[in-house]
Image (cartoon, rainbow, N blue to C red; front, side, top):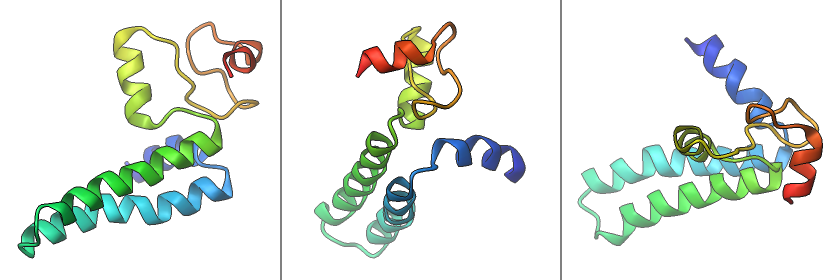
Length: 105
């Protein structure tokens, strides 16, 4: 299970800035949010942890040049084109080529 996760995760997070933003954003989202809720903090602390953590992760994917996992999932379900890997890596959407990715920017 961990091997499968890493096989998908690592190629989507190759940019150092993206890695650093995820290193901060993931714990902020998935540890900070419940921790502040359980601590009885005012409503804006858990909201800030959740929104801020996700914002950092989405910013990391913007730097990387690919869609965040949640966006890839939604776009796949809606039949929309998506960019799962950074430009120059493997094609993402069925039929997508590197030329398609470059013209979309």
